[in-house]
Image 1: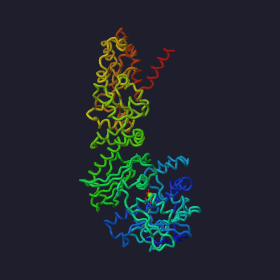
Image 2 (image 1 turned 30 degrees about the vertical axis):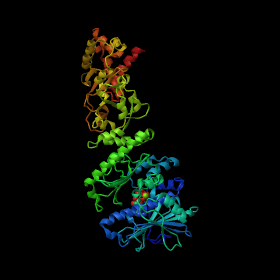
Image 3 (image 1 turned 60 degrees about the vertical axis):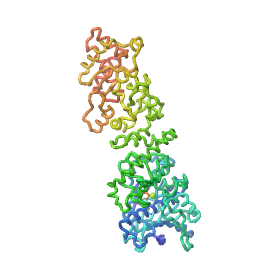
Image 4 (image 1 turned 90 degrees about the vertical axis):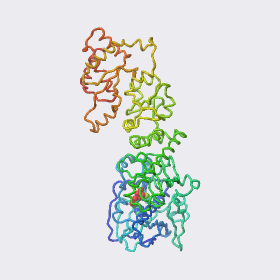
Amino acid sequence: MAKTAKKDTVQSNAQTHSFNAEISKVLKLVIHSLYTNKDIFLRELVSNASDACEKLRYTAITSPELLDGETDLKIRLTTDKAANTLTVTDSGIGMDEADLVNHLGTIAKSGTEEFFSALTGDSKKDASLIGQFGVGFYSAFMVAEKVTVITRKAGSDNAFIWESAGEGEFTIAEAPSDTPRGTSITLHLRKGEERYTDRHALAHIVNTYSDHISFPIEYQGEGDDAAEVINEGMALWTRPKADITEEQYKEFYHHVGHTADKPFLTLHNQVEGKLSYTNLLFVPSVRPFDLFHPDRRRRVKLYVKRVFITDENVDIIPHNLRFLRGIIDSDDLPLNISRETLQANPLLTEIRNSITKRVLTELGRKGKQDPEAFAKFWTNFGPVLKEGLCDAVYNKEPLLEVCRFVSTATEGSELTSLDDYISRMKPDQQHIYYLTGDRVDALRKSPQIEGFVKSGVEVILLHDHVDDFWVTVATQYKGKQLRSVLNSGEELADLKGKKPEDSQEKKDEAPKADMDALVASLKKVYGDAVKDVRATEKLTESPVCLAVDEGMMSMRMERFLVEHKQLPGSSARILEINPTHPVIAGMAKKLAAGADESAIEDTAFLLLDQARIIEGEELQDPNAFTRRLNALLKNAI
Ligand code: ADP
Ligand code: MG
């Protein structure tokens, strides 16, 4: 283990570097306002020391010479009361000069820029934001006025001293070549933080936050002859579930997840049989800031027989469960597997499928047990989870079972499941109906669902971006077809049943022959502007709406693709008209009384534009629209 090297003076060959702007911000927050609980700095340093030991243990499987006689991987805390210092030493992988600059001088995480632009300057809000981000190493400056890092990377002859007072700059100098492998971090404690030189205080913090660390953590005071081990030293997931407290799970989650929230769900399973593996996975209760960042790091670590292998580039968790954090420890994969060949190993797929099933089952259970808490989960991760529905190979039924939706049978943002939808279906209803759009409130008022609502047929209202995509792939649930209301007008007529001949609606309606004539005339008037015109039962309040043919992509999807230049332009729409609406009935009557098509032209185009506006479509000729509207207004006034 490293002797605590002399570190009070920066050596003459030191080079001064500046922290990047993000770190300077983090440091300010850390030092001045971040945590009321300063103890957590030790958790962060021990966590990094443990990561460093894990990295070396993995690398040494194929390159045992890197251990260089020092095979003990461990962490040691040493204190010096007189100097008011605490040193955390590990015999792990260590850092070379570039590592020091890159890892202790910049924040190189994906999404950093977006994250920092989200900081408000309000320290309370920022503290909770940064809690998700994880400041790790820099939390040392909460209690230290100066931090000295002495380190030598495994396999390298050169050692370095990094030093900083946490104020915009740090220095790097060469360290003596007899510096042991690994890293030793000395905190020159601030006045008032003397307690961190006390054995009992340190042991207490280690037991509280770092008991799950699987390497021995030793303590040695300045006069002590020998070090004593102060942690359990056993990987948490290998212990029986009954012996693990909620607090311990939470601390482990903070360690692997680099996060500060309380897990929404903890899944700890020791699976034996054809496949043998242990998973200890967590669903966060807050949405990670980088969830939609394309190159965000994966947060599930793969272990093989307790040895950390990787947390990068391995598809052990499907993409739509990427919010999961934690570990998977396989007994079946070979220990000396390289990260490169891992991806091709069929066992990996089996483990992934098994885990996916387990996670969905657990989420399903939670959804039934505690709908309120589940709704929060759904707000955080629903859109991500639904990405799996777009995936052709994904088993969609268990996933759809977990999905929650807003519908015409729920109020506000209250959610329902498809199972509940099915239990409310009308006796002769065959399908599950949905409508996609940008906002729930607009969807609730959409003309497209008027007839459904009036007939008591429930419609699922889909408002996430991903919805337009998955509805084209996941078209069934428990034997029921998912159908867009955009092309379901005819089925609605069947569901409504026969209307009594003398109902008010029937009385307002123009005779069928007149309506057919109107449809024919409208087609002529519109020409290429529409693909078709047809009467519908779908509408009750509105005169018109746009529709698409069965099997065609939704209008919203088409707009999205046009916007992203995936389609040259949008296709012509179908215009559906409401025979019971006074404007429509009036037009039919006018034609029946002998008027020619020019008499209905302005009204016809105003109606078409109106349908476009409601659907969120662009008007093809806004000038013509305002001219027609103004002519109408002039008459009205
Ligand atoms: P994180 O642990 O989330 O990556 P930290 O701020 O805690 O962020 O640490 C930043 C980086 O510094 C680590 O990812 C690692 O590369 C490096 N590092 C910190 N402590 C050590 C250590 N004891 N040994 C080796 N590398 C370390
Ligand atoms: Mg860390």
